[in-house]
Image: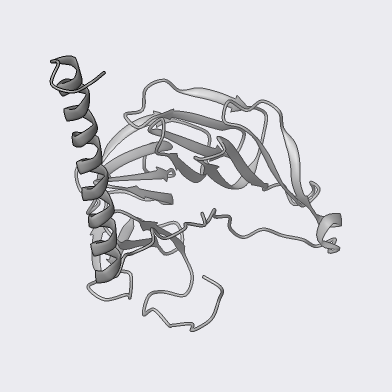
Length: 238
């Protein structure tokens, strides 16, 4: 994650990529076409699924579900399919979908469209337009702090990353061109990485010491309870 030890993955060098964390699969489309590709994370075992009409715009793979934005010959909006891309079903019409994000806490899909940012339940119900009129290039959801982040799509706008609450309220600039000292600051992608602290592991002696402490505490509690009962029954002085 620090950029060291790079490896080449034998997939197309251009396209739209996403990772299914649960299944450990890499998904991608090349340009705006009708072919979905997936592979192992090292690029092996490539599988493809072709749709009857074109075109796929963006992908989000979650568990056993694949969500994608589509348009042109396909109904413009958000679709759902099985993890291999089959059994596709149209969920809801939107403006041209540019990017998708998933919130695992509320099981909602967030859509960065050509004219708005919206969200919906994973089954396509409960659609809410959060920000409109609007144009965003990339969108991600921070499921821990309950924020969403996006990058401007309009080349005439100030180049910046913004964020808000998940309902679209409290919009604020997060990073701007002036912050990084680059007037041509451009964002080709966003992601969120959470730091995790590993659970300490115990050695054999550590397990033994812990077991002895637990056993000792248990015997102490039992002895105390026995003494209290004996005193209550008149067997011991109170």
